[in-house]
Length: 292
Ligand code: PLP
Image (cartoon, rainbow, N blue to C red; front, top):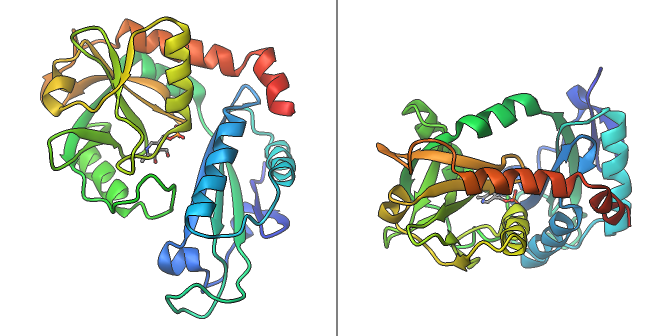
């Protein structure tokens, strides 16, 4: 079945979809993006991603090209046209097309791109059952990684370095030796005292939408929780470690560099948070909420 994309007001064949050579997203990384997971036909954390898109656009003074309700009509149409049951929807909004020059152009209209991609959820679930191994590396990103922009070169290089070194992913470490986050996920531990911890949402991390939902989930399950940064050493000596993101949901981390976390198997609490999150997001209640 041919893949369908959406570019500036039109649904087009994915293979034919293109943007202008002077799109500012292409030339300056002057663009923001969002990713929604789709599982069993459910669009996860719909409202949270929309709200963050608004914050990212606002941070860059880009006028939202569409109302949230119109955007959702397009997202649902894209899902339908691609017959997407399991996968993800990618959205990118740039400041628009203008002659290459650093200042904001006076008259550019924001450009909008949407793509949909299927993902093998059986494989993803299998990976979560096995757990992943992460490598740490210095966080050399810019100072506003809290804005979801397309400037992801350090993330790309860190991910590649991790794969080449035989790991599944990388965790960034700040100048104080504290873990910030993963290349495309937030980082969590269940510390030695039995507390779930993830870094506070300052400008040093992207405030994950999955992270926020998992905080609520953890609290509703009565797990002790604290927003407090942790060191590499604390993570290596934690009872459990895991990542959260729209694409990985909750995925246990079983090793950090050369150290095994806990007994080297996915932790019980990490795994229970994953199942709880998946059942919450695919529940009828969530579906009703999502359609509002
Ligand atoms: N941190 C970074 C750097 C990311 O790129 C992402 C997702 O792309 C996340 C965290 C997790 O965010 P979310 O849960 O909204 O997918």
